[in-house]
Length: 358
Image (cartoon, rainbow, N blue to C red; front, top):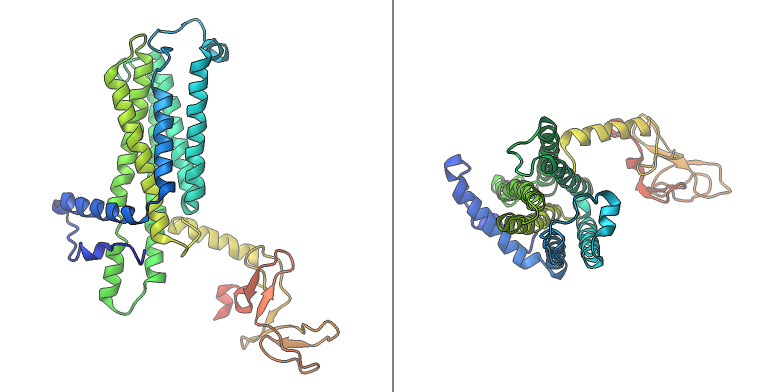
């Protein structure tokens, strides 16, 4: 983000107190908008348009299948086949565009793939739960059954879980990024780095996305459930909140990817990272091993910290300290190791557990 507008340029003396929340949000949203003007290219806008068209085709009753009331005795797969070919084609195009939209998100934002999949799954679960509840009570939550409330409640909890885990993973990784990439002895520079990486605006968009996803799904279900006439407010609200959910979903995935860039390939919470490190240490063992595939490396470390390896010359049987010349043939031992199993090139010191380095 070096060439992007910096939040510390406009939020010079940040007041994070609750009474300033409104002004702080406006400052953060304005900053994110200015950054988007610089960074968003055709690919970002294309994804937003694809998602919006997918939502439109999936919601608007172009050929009158919903407004006509349909055939209530025709259900399941056979009911789908009883629809007009034009309506089926419209549905398939919408489905294909949704697949294109989520595939585009997956490819464009590799750092947040798991979080995107969790949010998309929670959105789908919410749609299924609300469809089931609205089938029994078209005015849900009014008149809803216990099972309907339970299903929707579990889907909402899954959505909240996805949002919470996404928030924690980004927050913990950003803190790690600040301390590793922007560390400075100058307290003012560290404070500027913290301001530039403040997540207030992003977290507000995360909440907005969750609300839009919930309302879009509920209003869309109510529109279908209130057949044969549907409801103009329901379909307009559904389209409005779905378009908003599409736009904010691109934004909440784009911002962490831009902020962290290539400084890390792992977006996870501190606890998850600690568990991964413990598993890695268990796989590695006490000896030298490739950090990518954990294949054993033919190196040893002395009590003095010297790392020794067999002489790289095939006809020589000597053992030599890395970076030094063999006393038998004069061949210099490289300071890097190329794994014979996966081909990864690693510095010799990185082949050993961190705890053994001290």
